[in-house]
Length: 181
Image (cartoon, rainbow, N blue to C red; front, side, top):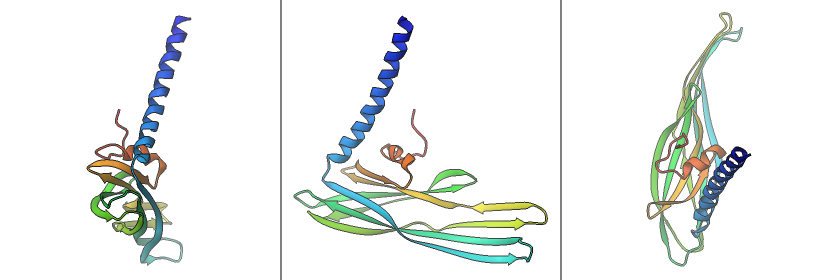
């Protein structure tokens, strides 16, 4: 009976710790007078057919680029400088990786919304199919999404991630695609 109580106590402690982390992230996000939202504005996919046969074999190159629109609104009394860190995630051979990181300082005026277009880096992918041989080959990378972190005085105050599983990771410094244990 004592062992059962200990296990329940440990399980409760783990749950409380996880909940405290979520509450801490929420409080940190709400403590600043900054609103941030992001949406996909446009996609630019360019396909180049290198060769194609009548029975379905082909060699096709695809170049991709997206434009996201970031909206920032500062509700503080004085203007503020916010560092916007953009982290672009891509995948190749079924593995996600950070394709590019960049940051810019944005000057925000009180009670005004500022919209910024974020252009993703271009990614290239090649697909070759040989139907008669039953072979298919792929190379290159494919853009999976992005993470945006707003920092004030070097501290992360807001995050946006196009994939929900990256939101918790976005609060970590430095950003990695794996959970720190």
